[in-house]
Length: 286
Ligand SMILES: CC(C)c1ccc(C(=O)O)c(O)c1O
Ligand SMILES: [Fe+2]
Image (cartoon, rainbow, N blue to C red; front, side):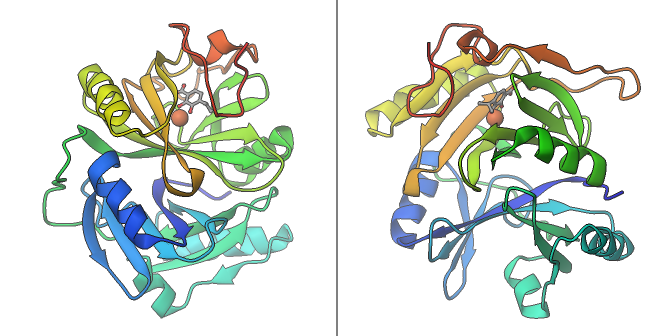
């Protein structure tokens, strides 16, 4: 069984790196960590980078997850290969571009590009962004799924993710004590459904609501509170239609052995207990 330790980074293709940089620094509140020929690296926490915009097709979206060590990576490659997933062994140059020691790439059953990485770089410098959004770190992703039940089996039985809760057929899955690191949301094709950063306080969520409104950044859901993780949240859209979420107060699963996933109905109250309705996200709004 593959053991995922944490989500590590997201790589997003973008035709306009300048626009991506502008949004990431002045709206989202990330810090530029450097740039390569066609790459823009951004930080949100102690890691060297957690988001990389790379010049190109915005449909090219990848999520990286950390595994323990080189032996675990090789085991993962064999497991995936045996299950019929084409596995790409990252070259030294590709690993350098990802600021990791080594990695493999494959697609999940929906076709999402996933990378497993060993020894992602950390930074000796403190994360310090020019816009103070209160970000404490990159925390989870929503992944599109053409068949959430099938993909849940892949993530739980092959990658050792555990379901913390379900909303309709959306599983919220953890890979460590944090309530969820991956959510699978039904969609017609592969892609990243949203990217979550944790912020320090509810004040940060509400401050950003007014700040982003002022900047004419489309707010697509919230401010609100998820009954599942308990987090207060705000979703807004960025370059190439990518949805970003700030949230604070995500539960931790205290007892791994006894936790039983709760089933919530596929209805607005299961996504927000305050009555906020999603607009511009493919979620139930009535
Ligand atoms: C996939 C959706 C929109 C969702 C639902 C619940 C939570 C949570 O409990 O924190 C999320 O973070 C979500 O993104
Ligand atoms: Fe989320």
